[in-house]
View 1 (spheres, rainbow, N blue to C red):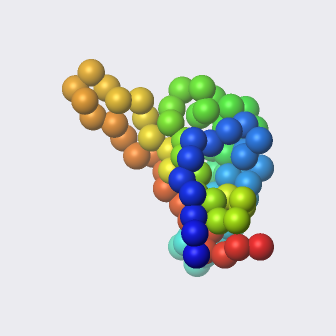
View 2 (cartoon, rainbow, N blue to C red):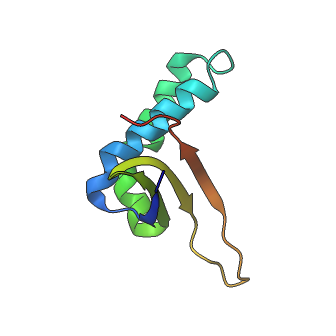
View 3 (cartoon, rainbow, N blue to C red):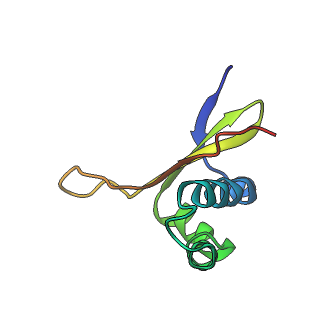
Length: 95
C-alpha cells in the first residue's frame, strides 16, 4: 500500500476533522464519555480552529489513494530549536 505525507491544505479540513473524530471515538470509548469527547472535538477541531492551526502551526496529512487517513500537528520551531507534537492520529480505515 502506497502512502503520501504532505502539508495539509485548507481543502483537507473536513477529512482531518473526520480522522480526529473517528480516532477520538475509538481511542477513548469507555474512558471519556461520548458527550465530553464531542464537546472537545467541536472546540478543538471546528472550522475556525482548523484555520488557526493552518496559519500558526505545521500540519501534515497522510494519504492513501488520495484519501486523508491521518494527520500530525506540530508547533513552530522555537528559538531553542524545539518543536512540540500537538496531535497525531490515524483513522485505521480507508473508505
